[in-house]
Image (cartoon, rainbow, N blue to C red; front, top):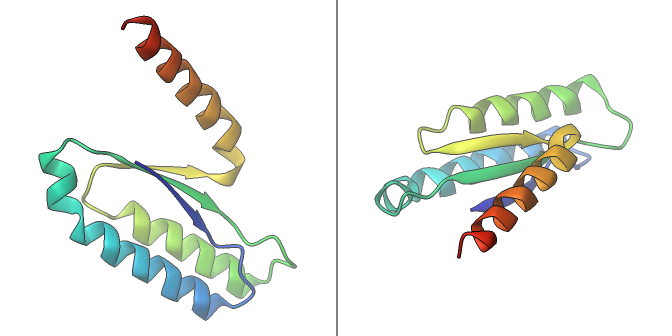
Length: 99
């Protein structure tokens, strides 16, 4: 399940609230995801406005917290989006070809 999570925010506290909220949501879905063999692909974007140490730390903390989820997941950071999209397209094409 592709899950975009944007941390392109101006306030570190809002970033913290957002990653905490996502951690809770994904933790609640853990059993269902395991039963149905789902994986969460978390596409995470970083703050783009003047990156302050506080914003950067909040972003890095968010990546770390989401990375600690026990559910099956992949963390895809913004700088890896193009590679992720290319790989996903290959997988979809291969799946369509085999049908």
